[in-house]
Amino acid sequence: MTAGTVIIGAGQAGLSAAEALRKRGYDAPVTLIGDELAPPYQRPPLSKGYLSRELPADRLWLKPESYYAGAAIDLRPGVRIARIDRAARCVVTTQGELIAFDHLILATGGAARRLPLPGADLPGVHVLRSLAHADALSDALAQARSLAIIGAGYIGLEVAASARKRGLEVTVLEAADRPMSRTASPLLGGWFGALHRGYGVDLQVSTGVAAITGSHRADGVRLMDGERIEADVVLIAAGLTPGVELAEDAGLACADGILVDAHARTSDPGIYAIGDVARFDSALYGRSIRLESVQNAIEQGRAAAAAICGARAPYDPVPWFWSDQYAIKLQIAGLIDGADRMVRRGDPEEGAFALFHFRNDVLIACEAVNAAPEFMAAQRLIAARARPDPDRLRDVTVAMRAFLS
Amino acid sequence: MAKITYIEHSGAEHVVDVETGLTVMEGAIRNLVPGIDADCGGACACATCHVYVDPDWMDRTGPRQSMEESMLDFASDVRDNSRLSCQIKVSGALDGLIVRLPEQQG
Image (tube, rainbow over all chains, first blue to last red; front, side):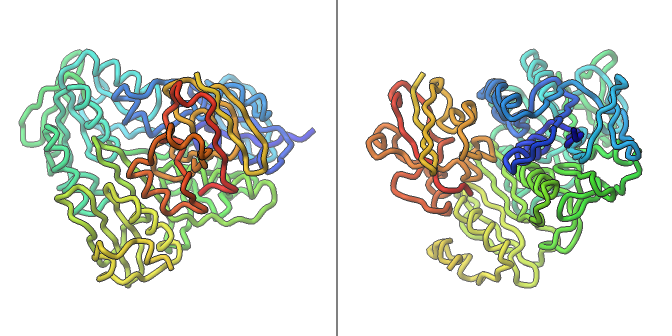
């Protein structure tokens, strides 16, 4: 009997790989190991509908309980892996159990970054990555009147919107000069800043936090300029640290993520990495990228499964992302880094518009606010490395379909 | 509860009971009906839960929402009775609903 495939990490990526192996007819054992107690679940709603209490926990599960036995996937929740023994081709749990593998897939995601601030370890200081985090934050908000959020990225802003829906006073503190400075264009970041202020969020940009205050539990934050902001609950929303520890300890090549090729293979043939933790060369963008998205989790999981089954299906995605805040749906296709020209379509004042980003006349990204046709068309145009005419793109009387023919 | 029949492109039928308040997409996921990917989990962001509503049921499932309409505009093999199943909420009025699945999603 063969040892089969062991997957470390039972999130969206790990599950996608397991499911894809079975869909491809892989008949060796598949073991899906997760360190959380919950079965595989959707993370995106944790900062959105789940936190605003519009979506109950039982609607988060990616599969019904009966799926795993039916698909012969050995789901092992609540199990932590201590190390990978590459020579012996096995992983070792923190309980000392050895689990052998022919193929190993690392889908270890990452941890919410905790800032090295004084007071960051106080009770009442939260981060948001897991369902347990979301439950803790949600329970804390039920007892609170005010929330301070450090960081105005997607998680910070989505939590701000959800907390406003629940009636809390919300302050968001951002060190950069605008929200979403890492991933979005200045125009889009500024627009979202205004949106949040319109909903009563006290958003302060170019604002450094010096400390989280409180003697026994957090009661606010102190800013670099000395000002103090009171808050019953503090959320640190400062991004993700990729979970490379097991891979690094095992001597696999890592650099802000586990390095993989277009088939999700690490520097050890037989060991793969997928999802938030994997860094790969994008042929489309001509550089190495690491994507934190549902799409990447699902598709790179499928790519690893394909490679294990001997298929050749190089993974070179047009990245896409979405965010729901208040009544706004943001959809982003592509990556804006390196853009040298932006074209606007529609009027931001009217709440529906798209920003197209070009590099050397080639469309590389589209940020669409309540503008699904622009988003859907852009995905295809970016994949085709198309050069749509900026003047026609700007003209809302030209339907997006016209650019696809 | 509503009884919903999902018919795969191959003709395979899945008749399942779906709890009121869920979506037609969730009914498929929970009952392991193949052919509905729902990558975005029901956020109307991906168009991978496309179904064809049986013509006799189109009145009761109601019209497409505007975001859904736009997403469907760019899905493949879209017909008059195309819907994104994440945007159809299950109620008693949909007891007996029949939906058919496209050849492939995305």
